[in-house]
Image (cartoon, rainbow, N blue to C red; front, side, top):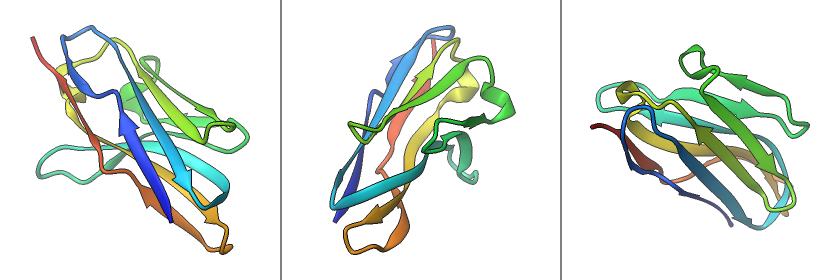
Length: 120
């Protein structure tokens, strides 16, 4: 069984910073792409940033230059450094990972989400 656990969300003032972490654990053989998504009430979940196993990254236009995604393969962990936060960044942030388990099955896993609120 595989689990993704996010941490690091909270309340921050506009212009502030937060760092999200997501650790994968369980019967993991290998991890391919990892990423962060976000969702607000009434809207579809959207990709914020993604990182491949080799380290190449991609970002939503709305966060380019402000957010940085990184990963520590030894720790099966992905991070999202969020700077210059804006009220419109307020959302529940979800971690996603494409994981091959010891049974050799390959599937996408999701964390439960962490709330990020940007408000004065």
